[in-house]
Length: 269
Image (cartoon, rainbow, N blue to C red):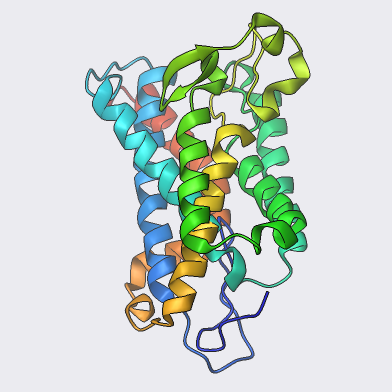
């Protein structure tokens, strides 16, 4: 794909180290937005640990408000990752890096906290989405950006209830699928979890790949407008978080757990 020469190459998704070797301005607002979403994720996980690991129930967090907050966070990460795909270099290498980080999280939780094991979490999704987008570029590039946004987001909404038993609108199942579709234990990466499946962080390819592609088509529409000035706004702390988001993500949960464990042992919470 032809690059927009008015902007500096920028890494996508969770990884966010700064690019070097060019004088073009970085789209720092994208880093800040990622950092903003990451900050919300850290707060969300802190409350998750307090509620589900240390037994301190929080009514609003376990209700609709907490669900909406969770959806805002994951939608933000996935849309931003898709939007930034074309701004980065070596998508296969980056995809393998993020996928490897996701596999490391799954292995670590299986060994250390099996009751909270992560199977096909958001890092695994983002890594697979990068690799699949690179493989599907010849097809995706044939679709007009506006049409691509409508198709991708429509398919995302139509398949969002797939892990819950069928197709429909959002989380509501309108077209139930036969139980046989969920009988195989190994189909959970595609959105068909078996009856005994559990993951504390589950983002299957269907529906979330379609949301990733919504962000990818949104970038193509933005690129055609050739207006990068607003996206060059820099918000220092959030910008730093966004540029180092992969490493902050990998470190934040052990740190949170250690702090909460210490507070719990001291009787503070």
